[in-house]
Length: 277
Length: 298
Image 1 (cartoon, one colour):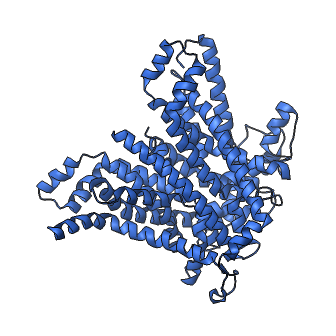
Image 2: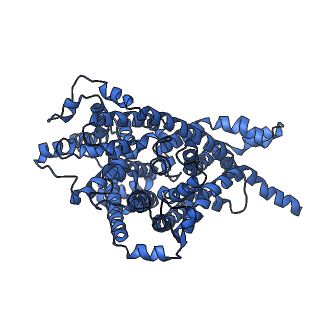
Image 3: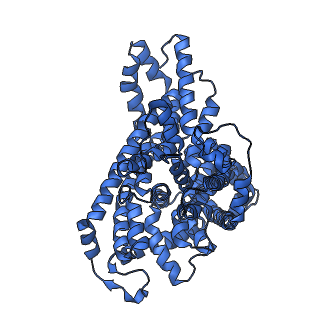
């Protein structure tokens, strides 16, 4: 690996690798964004145009369609409610796992983790049946609840790691000064892990925002979220590429920006702490 | 004293109890309910009381069902191919990104983060446009470079197109995991290999790969579990078609239970099979993670 290569060969390798990465991984995304600013004529012209006068007509048409704005608001409310609720439930649990020794603690922790890996398609069938029993299908409530099933395990697992990084002496000092344990948790541990809380929330937001299976099965019209917008586009044939690209751009830009913000924690989070960067 | 000990034992549950109870209610209860429905014949649209207990009959019939066998094979081909390609490409990428004095590293890493965060159903939709035989960018590039224009919507190329999207979206994930692994490798064994005159191939084969083994297994397991669950991309990209070319297991469950026919009991039995397979894999993953944690503490 560290063998001395002639430097020009190394430079050529660097450039070739970089071009490969940009073309294969970045370009499809950029192309989508570009497409959303093209007129219908520009979209279908061969060879494809790269430089053009951008138009906002796709975005206008998209919002004129009505459902898009509705889905967007649904996505926003569902994701925020679910993530807030998940953190409220998960943060104390993470603290408990980080700070106390008790019997079968490892098993409890791993049980929580294993829930995160269960396939959505399997739990969605009972959710559908139970949801129809309680007549809560096609409500934001049923989505918020179902998103807890992956957000809570994930948040517990992430936050435990962050809390473990805070020395136990902090809690002990606070409790000697007359704080209750709960007080120490709220006034010291939570502020000290603010970065971790932010990173965990953002990762939960990304996962919930992108969730498709629950949204497809459990909602029909009222509570539909953005990822299911694809069903709207699959029904009629290929004339509205620009609008599709616009919908795709608005849906993906927030998560991409968020992901770039928490890049440092992304891999740790997605491997459940198996890799630390 | 005895009382005190139990109180002390219970105290942690004041903290983790709410999470455990919530998870029990929203995941364990539904899973038990899934097992229950898998033992019944029940069709969508009928009242719940119209269900008929059929024992293990649903399980017998799915394993006799050509469609289910086909979906299992398709899922197997999809999973093995996608994960293999992602691993090889991801390893090459990680090796590349670990180069000392690589310029623009931050920018390249950012490029890799984008595909894996794009909403999967949206990725499927957009790539469907890219694969369009007449106006898609994929065939424009292939046509310009190699003068070919394959029909990606055809039966034989539908699966490769799904795999390609998965490779686009998840190779970065494998690459970034392996990169984290590579940068955690201690320098001493690598330097020892260099001193002993090992070629770079030998160093890779006998030093780097064995040291990376746990992290490679973790990457492979996570990707395999995700690929087995795949639903959203294939839903938007091919809808399981043409015909049944890309009808992965999740897609088949959807079609059986909700879309084409409403055989919920039968679909539940299929879902149970999927749950069992994934649970086995996740237990493997957890064991690996446990070993790693212990190794870190030792």
